Length: 62
Image 1 (spheres, helix red, strand yellow):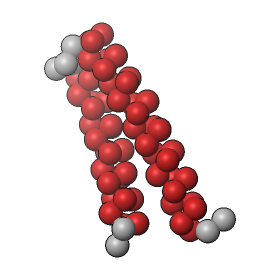
Image 2 (cartoon, helix red, strand yellow; image 1 turned 60 degrees about the horizontal axis):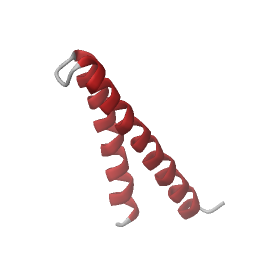
Image 3 (cartoon, one colour; image 1 turned 135 degrees about the horizontal axis):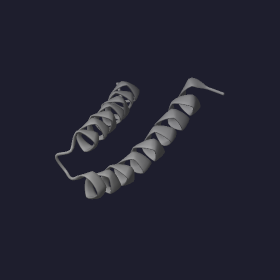
């Protein structure tokens, strides 16, 4: 497997994880409230995943 193929797989898996986390964040927000510590903590985790995705894309395009 080439590095490019591996990068594409990583990006696809990360996108899938982000989508799952986004849906879960909505559920947590409805359940606990938008300002609850659980919602904020999960949102921060999702932000980290999005930042990782953006870095992968940026590095792949340079």
